Image (cartoon, rainbow, N blue to C red; front, top):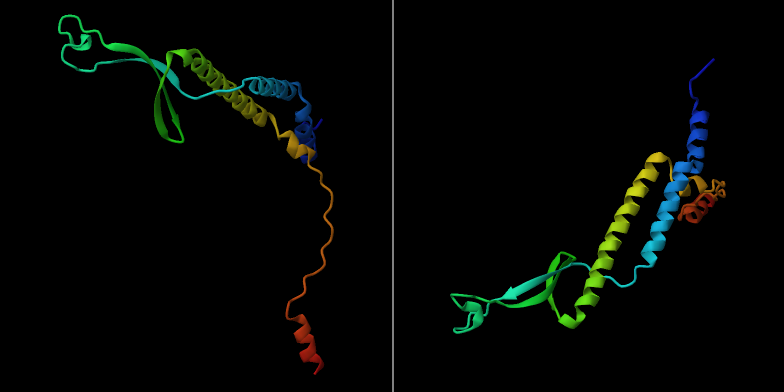
Length: 159
């Protein structure tokens, strides 16, 4: 009995890989991630923190040598976008809304990271489904190209 694989056998194995349960499971997980991403809504990158300020004015509570009490807390949103670092103070009335935007962005990052991990797993299992579905119809035969100076050459030959 011959246990060696032939090239046609390998091609059949690879073409059947897109139908394996593992690939289908990964595709279903990716589809689920896409649905979760579509439900996210508005988002904003960054993180929120609380800041305290010391004004330094003489006689102010923030510079009291016995019991200094800085001004604040003030909420601050910091983020980097296109390499530019940005800080913005957030008003107390907007804090819950901005916190929800930042949380949505963190969820977005987690979901896209999971999608990338699944895409890598799927690629390692076999060729992508799009490559397998490509039609391999023959191209139309082209007419041979004529040289631009062909009519002039014919005239010279006729003389």
